[in-house]
Image 1 (cartoon, rainbow, N blue to C red):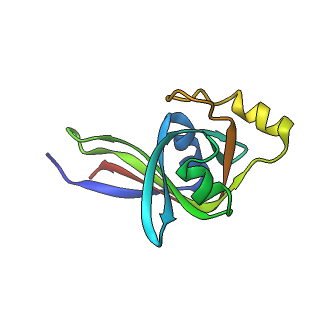
Image 2 (spheres, rainbow, N blue to C red; image 1 turned 60 degrees about the vertical axis):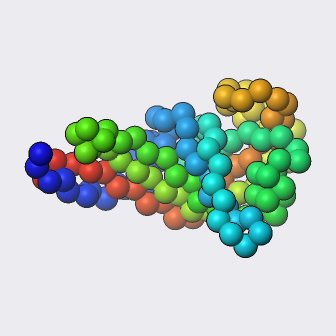
Length: 135
């Protein structure tokens, strides 16, 4: 198998790739240590949107304090050693406007059961994407 090159993706291409996959990971700080949670998401107007429930770790540690978070998603073929990975760093916030929250909530179909009535939006500040391509 030939080597692979690492190609940098533009911010726009990175967000398009995030929009094409249903699952990503939110990385945040909990008790001064890194924590990671897998979540399903959508990308709307250049922002990553997820749902949560009041009282959950995401609600308490991320949305309630407008935390700095990272969001990562990828699509990798381990057999061919091809694929891509995107990391977004930004601020998470709870969507407060009831109308906007309802609109966004309708766009995200949760994978888990429960109310999941809160909507959390991640506003990207830094977008980094890379693709493994044939060498």
